Length: 233
Image (cartoon, rainbow, N blue to C red; front, side, top):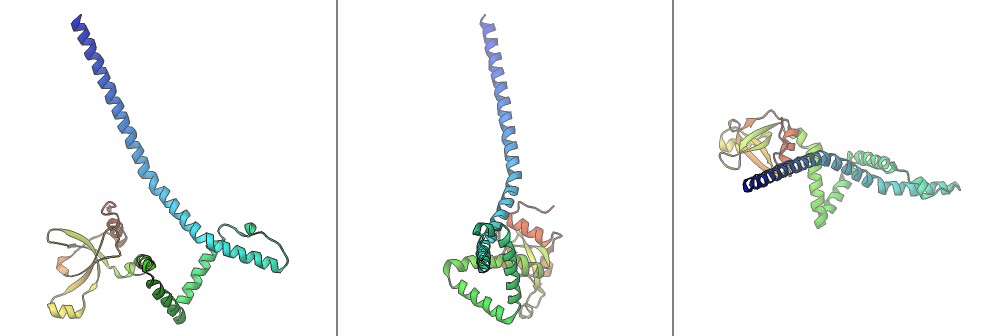
């Protein structure tokens, strides 16, 4: 009887352990599915959230101003229209686009450039605003103006010490003064920092000490900004 009891107890214990393993495995499977779905959904959600945020920001204030102007114009012709009726979604985006085009036209002329330069100097004098403006200015220059034209290729150099390597961008040949001083051919390599690629280090290295990579500038920037997570295929 004791042996039968022990057998039943061991059988019940084994069955309990077996069920526990199944529950644990099921929980791990559910957790894996949840995080897999989370990783897939979050980038899409943040993308749409960012787009809606930018749209609302760019549309709200100009739309209110234009709606007020429309109501005023209608009142001149003795026609009544409410502010809600004139406040059409998307109207601010059209106005913002028009303002950007006008600003672009002004910035291409001497007086406009001087005016924008004066506004820029005024912004740089304000402590907190100057930091925000400088950061956005660097990002815009990196995306639209400088990097796509000055970064010739992606290279690999030994930095910051021998035996460790960093990704950099080949920009141009080093100044002639440096070449004459060192009596050797040197090239300029910009080493960006992570996760902000607008800051970094300028190195002047020998051409034989750099290794050119096949990845594009855009792929390299993604790789740097992500801290090495988004590796080019």
